[in-house]
Image 1 (cartoon, rainbow, N blue to C red):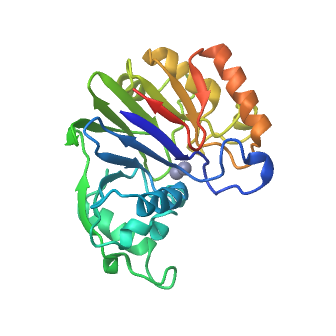
Image 2: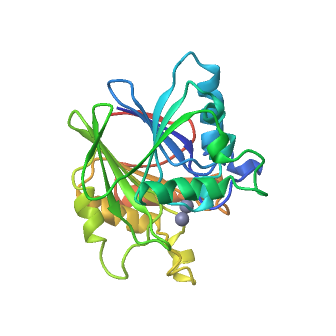
Image 3: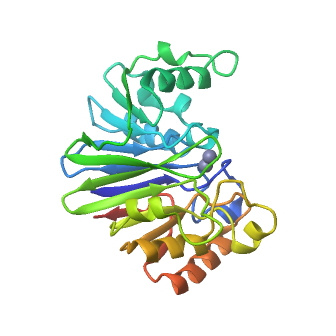
Length: 271
Ligand SMILES: [Zn+2]
Ligand SMILES: [Zn+2]
């Protein structure tokens, strides 16, 4: 499996210069399975760049699956601007934790009048809507499953497993007051790569951010150790954190859990 990041920021995109090393787009990542199936996790503003790349490429017809962790705007902002959405040769299978008709309705509202000029239902691509519940589903030779996270209005972690490797995305989650999230630790047990919410520094979190549904690098490192993961990738960076801040976060987190890195746009990891 090949993992690539297209957006690693939470809340809003960042365009100011000191945020350029890690990228300024909101969450989007791709996993390409050994069989070549394209699985996308979230459609933040990074999804726009991915769409331009796919539209310019030779991959026709484009068949892909989009796993939506939840419906907050930072994870869906790129959908209306995704070029292949308007191409009749594109096939997209949308997955979320919601019922298929609810998922479809939410995406329709996202692109509804007067917020966007083209209704979601009028876009030319072929679409399917599926729910991921408690069971594993097969996508392009990979097994995909979900686990609920602690986040306002809900969010799910996704696990993509293929050929003995696995990647877990826990993009938006708040750790319990004491210890680690036992469900998430079990879900991520022994994974090759845990992508984890590092929105706040421990100091910011302690200064009034409890209950916002996000975590810190410190809690991410604790979770990685408790779950015995092989690699921790910190992500969903705060828009206020410039490159220097993220480098500090990466350095401190490595002291707590050695195999740690900060996610950055364009970074490709192979498992
Ligand atoms: Zn988010
Ligand atoms: Zn959210």
